[in-house]
Amino acid sequence: MRHITLYIFVITILLSSCAEDKSTFIENGDLLFQDLDCGELCDAIESVTQGVDGAQLSHVGIAVKDSLGNVSVIEAYGTHVVKTSLNDFLNRSFDKEGNPKVIVGRVKKEYNELMQNATKEAEQLIGTRYDDAFLINNNSMYCSELVFYSYLMANSGAPVFKLQPMTFKPLNDSIFFPAWEEYYKKLKCEIPEGKPGLNPGSISRSDYIDIIYTFGYPTGYKPEKPTKGKQ
Image (tube, rainbow, N blue to C red; front, side):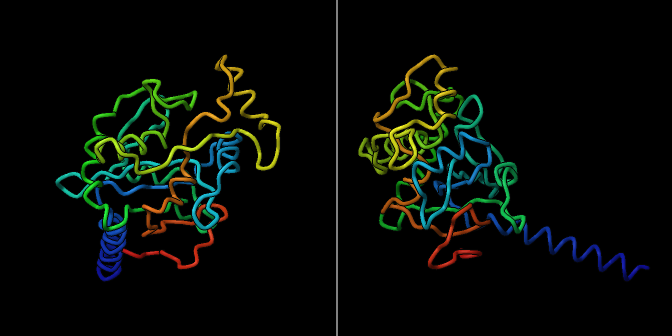
């Protein structure tokens, strides 16, 4: 019985260590792209712009590491910009293997100096109201807008990620997604079709970004070079 108890104890420690090691490679400023299963709105976001290697992505946050090595994610989520534990972030949606549908992007080496400054800028935005209308420059933030401004300010006002005309229609279609029509009807404002903006999918395909790790596979994600476990 003692041997069995000791065996279970050792296995538990090893599994715990492996779980902790999953985040040791993450650096300040890494971008965590997520296939967030939130219903029709997430489906609409994912349908408008395809992510890197076909990934359907509806959310993104910025990784930040404290002096003890603990990883959190700064994100525009819920009602405000908040700091969320990595564990809580990862445990929102899972692929068919039971792994978090999250891939990690990192600014390419020649731009790495921006990463530390971007996290500092993101920290300053914690508490900002969530941008329900998805508009730039309205004193509120949606997830991709948080990434855009954090890196913009870290880069002395020069954009790292490009704003593009937003669309709320299926590709090659002239009719709005019904989910967006209902959403903006409740907000009592017009759908900002054609207004400048960006989304997780477009950021993940940026020339500034390398995908360096795969926690799990977002829907549609078929990387040419799998990054599972790459650090």
